Image 1: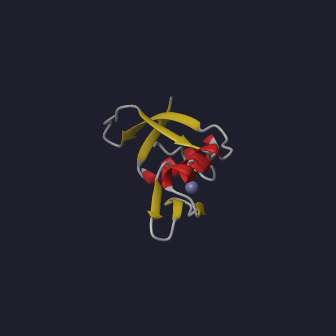
Image 2: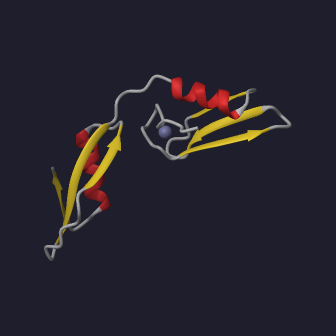
Image 3: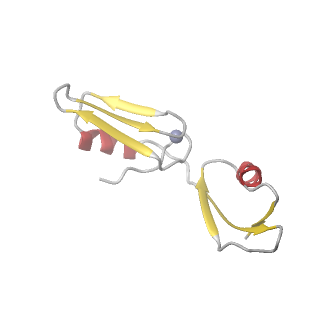
Length: 102
Ligand SMILES: [Zn+2]
């Protein structure tokens, strides 16, 4: 089953663990540590996770332009963060580059 993005931070870096002996399952977001657990099987916990309330993701398309003029292909970024925050993070991810928001 496909797990939806984290309701807390929007990351899709989601991990599902379960133990049959303990009848215990846990879903954790690697990005922000938000987690959901219960004494239920993986499928039922996945349903619960996917039913959590989520804000729609902000989608940002951008290109990275290096100092010597190399332009990257268009990249997409999905997040629950504001556009301003995403741009700030991209700028710190690519020092000495120009970020062009499309
Ligand atoms: Zn998260």
